[in-house]
Amino acid sequence: MIFSMIYASRSEENERIQLPIDTNSTLASNIRNIWHFPSKQAICIELQNNTRCRRPAFLGRLSGQSLALLDWKNQNDERFGPFKRCGSYGGQWLSNGTYFLEVITLFCEDFGINSLTKSQNESEWLSIDFKHKCMEDPNYNRVTHGADSHIQIRQQVIPPSHYVPRGRWVLPTAESPPKPIHYRYQPIGCRENPKTARCENATDVYRLRAYSYEWEDNAGEVWREQVQNVKSGSRSFPTVCFVGYSHSRITKESFVRLGLPKQYAIHVKVKWPEDITAALFNQSYVEQGCKVYIIAAAQWPGSRIDRFPYLFDRFYAVMKQIVETATSVFAGRDDDVRVYMRSIHEIPLGDFTGSCPIVDWRSPIVMNGYSYLVEKAVREVQEKNDTSNRLIRYLDTSFLVSPMWDSATDWVHLPFQVSDEEALYMASVVSNNLLDYR
Image (cartoon, rainbow, N blue to C red; front, side, top):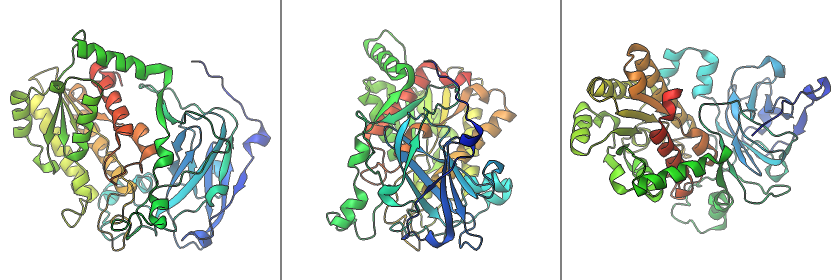
């Protein structure tokens, strides 16, 4: 697949297109303008000087022939002059065409990884207490104006080359203009009465269900063929143990749905990350034959189960302990063992997440913060121990999962539509040792 470089003229570089603001938004009076910069592949929100929210946490998605989340930059970018918050779609794989744009405000003040990028003070960021931070009202958090917010992408957008194949969520047939896809949320009261029109409109998942995942250069078909070779016995495959609770169980089920024999996929049930100990590693290695571990234990720490969530500093400390424990157990013991620390799945905004006072902290801001800390723990242990460079890896599946972050029909677990593709990618990583060549 060959892509040509596109050079923009000076007039194209300076072009900006104004987009409508939703006057019902909780931030409507705080926003001066919303702009699309086509040549810079960015959406920028210009805030009023006296804005109530100095550093809002925005989440934006483009939907059309494919889906893409905007990558928000919290610090001022000199390319955009006075504009305060800009979300880029330049790192996504998008065909040219018309796309519906939706931007919502999650929190008035961003305390996620974008705020860390701005402050560069990691110890201060780790100590943030977000227990009592409420989200903006999910009923009125959209800042773009409904179905009127469309942008035109004139040239195909191709992200930079990467060590893993690219992919994207695509529609089987193009729509012009694309029908709006609003983020799904569960209004308060809809848990008890889901069939009212108000609830059905907010929770509808039909539009997201129409998308399927497309891998660049047919990588997915190559991986599926490898799975069939494992099934027929012509290709070897290690026993993979999924350590965690229900999200890990779903991933294990997706592994089996791919066609992998059941003996290659084992669920090691763990609710709390503190329970991932040396004893657990030793027992599962000896008794269950685990050769590959895929670990994710963050949903319970972020939920309402224990009354208060794990703040970032506590979560990071536990993740680092897991990585250090795995290193001490397996380093020098078995060169074939791999431990993958998986990125954390976001979940839709349910009634508990959107309530105030908040009673469930699993917003995308917290879950993405947890993912950053998982990666940080892996990176820091690798820097101290050469053995762990091959033994332990951070397994990032957010490129695949995050564009469909709100697709869970039960408000918690990935649907098989997403989980099966994530499992296929994981199987390819395990089978081909893809991350060994990072």
